[in-house]
Image (tube, rainbow, N blue to C red; front, side, top):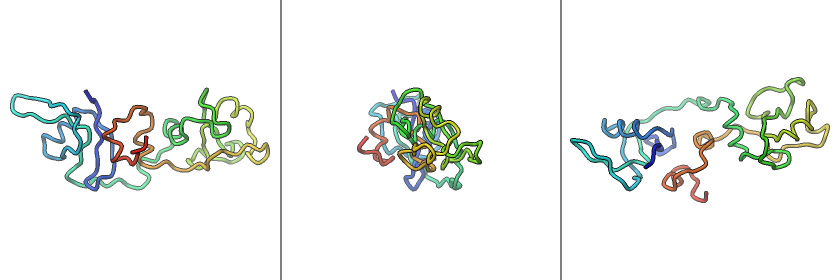
Amino acid sequence: MPRRVLVLNNTYEPLNICPLKRALVLLIKNKAEILESAGLKIHSEKLSLPLPAVIRLHYHVRVPPGERRKVSRRAILARDGFRCQYCGSNRQLTLDHVIPLSRGGASTWENVVTSCAACNVRKGASLPSEIGMAPHQRPRPPSMIELLVSGWSDLPASWQPYLGLATV
């Protein structure tokens, strides 16, 4: 039985992943509609509802730009595909400042990448150009979808069309 539900704005943009209980409250209060069902039904004394997998709100929720864009370890790891941006390893992952803090770098999306412990130690407080270690991808802020699904390894197939991940 699914315990989490994908919540879409009324414009079909992914907003959140919420617990099943919260999704049921939104449905019962007629604040949302079911777009995808898990195939089961949930029954109470007075009503019977399909078990939701994806719901869409009947109203618009304005998400301020940058609201969900706080730098976090989990989001950086997900953005970088849980791989070291220098060698491609997926073991002993840490975070590395491309321009080290000791040299004026900041903890921003554009300056922090996923690094394995060995590459992080090898790079140390050097600039990438000084030791020939450039990240495979240029660091950037993650998309809303990358932030939503960071840390989820088993996304339900019913979510994929709404997240633009049909090939996953």
